[in-house]
Image (cartoon, rainbow, N blue to C red; front, side, top):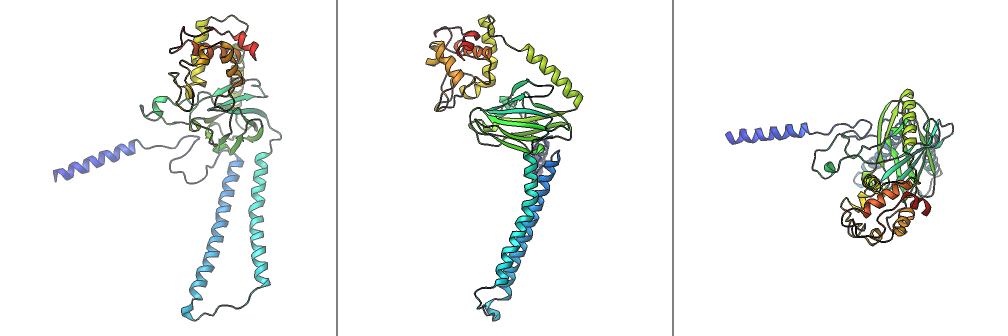
Length: 385
């Protein structure tokens, strides 16, 4: 009896622990045991849900009708009841029926679906435009017009590595949180011009009913409007490489007053961060900044230790390019290396940031003091563009 009570007590503790650790719905993101499409926060999302149910009901009715007739025919006209097979070979009435009825069903499904798709692609009358660029593995945002015109930044996954490596408990927004979300005003039509800087990505936010492939060399347009203030989360929906699962999307929808305030702050920050490549930058300052640039753009492939990933990404620690003449490293940072995963960073980083990360790699790990050209200036990067 004592053993039984002990076993029941242990089971109760285990159950309570499981309940206590139970995952909860993520605001603006996926829900626990979600079986249906998200309801969304705009009319397009609601239209998509309505279409989903319409198609499901039509398919269910067809399924019941077809299989109902089939099973009835098998039961009512079985050989044991003396049923005799029909001898006719063709029937104009049947031919007309099974041509016209499916045609009408297809039209009934196609008309509302076409209306919704056309509305999803109609970017006319947009209140503002944001250029969205997919990179391995982050998103770049640039405000093309409106109060925040000219503001641009990269949005990276902000989930701590300790959570990903199971050294810490998972947070409530695990793998669905970023350091800099896309901020837009509520109730405004936002056109998104989507492209990519390396491979095909896909910008998808279910609550906003927007999903657009990002293809290198092409600009694909879509739009969304959020009717409610809040944060809405999505992910890259195209398998784009090793860290495909680590490039989430967060769209922060704010009131018009907060939007105006945010735009003004970002413009000031952009002006303050307008790096001058012609300025004489101390080597120590470049290296310190380069560490941050490396952590945001390079660490996923080349690792924090600079050892890279065997068979996939080369090591920078002891690299002939990093320890060789600076012109070669500047060139590969600006142009990338065709046929490999090394993409150009000319569009992502300015001259100061490029010089900073180059200096950091040359002064880190086992490279310090061993290579040629120990200091690379932003002016040299600017001249090489």
